[in-house]
Image (cartoon, rainbow, N blue to C red; front, side, top):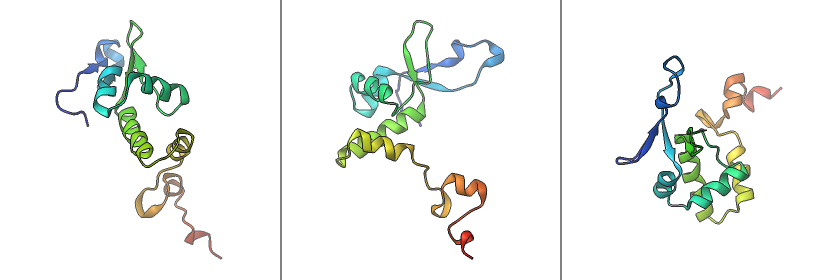
Length: 118
């Protein structure tokens, strides 16, 4: 969800009509301001692989999607709990539990720990 008043970039201006996919992207400064981090932090998190830029403008400016926004909020929350970035990277790369505590992979396979009992 994009906060009211956010200065977002409409990617429809970057692609031909046949390839348009309606989505909004965050400029680095806006993303930093709304999450409460510095532009340098976003750059560092990108280098560390904690977030990924969605694309770049023709002039080379980095643009981030709502997934990056959500991951940044999660990173900052975990940092406030005292976690180091290396620990946060592990947490972010783990499969997230879905319904009834099963991971998405288990849901896709229809497996649970109970299914594997003899």
